[in-house]
Length: 440
Image (cartoon, rainbow, N blue to C red; front, side, top):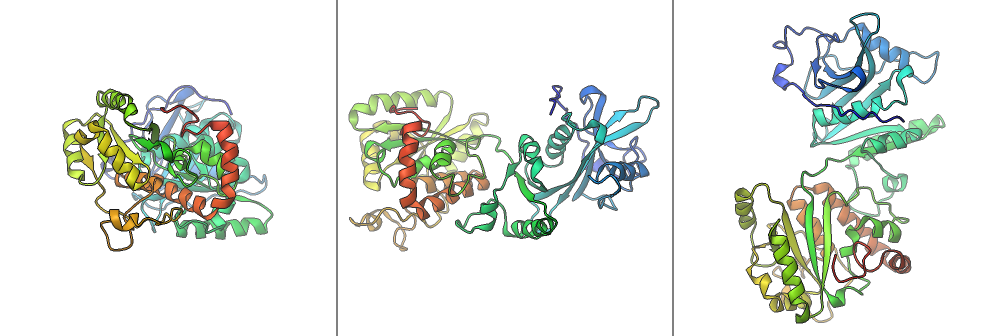
């Protein structure tokens, strides 16, 4: 697929300009549409058009939509203008007239079940313009223009996997759709059931159907520092490494493939603390971070109010969250013996979910000693649960559920995964980012 270098400019007119105040708008004629790309590549322009549609759009679909030459199909199109349905087209000036020909078209329909999900459907490219990157550009531009904060999904044949992955979609593996290994699924149940019914129809015709999801990207990733006790490094029950996409893929990916890449969502670095001799190194790193980031320590006695106060005063500065990684006894020891931690602003979670972590037994009564709840230490989260809760409170529910899903799979397959992890360590090292040193 050829890459078009010129970048599409998104200049979508406000919703208030649709109907009847948009220059006497009456129909979906190509010269009476809401343009949101003033300088598309190679004389192409991106538009959102509104019903009722002229014959040109119907003829475009009739000539290009069906893969069968003798079958002329027009997919369903919205009959009236509304905020839940949108038709986007890519047009090109005709050589012999002032007419603008449709080159690519697609439809976006917001779900009636969950407004956070929008269906990408009826994507069609003119036969003579295929394999030029035009469909890819319209998909990217229309998703950004319609709603950059929602989750998009589509169903497509398996030969389009590469196209949708290049457009930013994630293919949901079949075993993830069929199995119920984790309580946290990459898509809501209504969507998985809808897809299964569609896939069954395709299978009856000897064809395979794939489910693709396009997750919204956080404006700022979550930056986390794991201040890790040295004894935690070699423990097979540690969970901090689950957020590393490469380590997860090599250790568990064969059991349950990762659906949502965490790399763009959470940046994790590890500092190993083995005693007071490491205090100088730790304190220097904290001081270096403080010059560019707001620092917060996840620890008891904190609140979200302090974070909001700093955020309002330093709106353009990103935050870094320091998590003490070890047993509760080791975490308290690190907090006592690293004095610079005492002066950091603290935050704690407003609503702590019950822990699902079961790999470490309560032989010494630590749950009763450190828990503040009467449910047997349900508020004592493991490292990956802390990171998932942090992402959830920052609004990244998708990333949070992916971490919890990975933890579920890790615990359910713990004996089988250990051997694979040993092989992975030889490839990446012990560190979260494949580095054996004490710092990243």
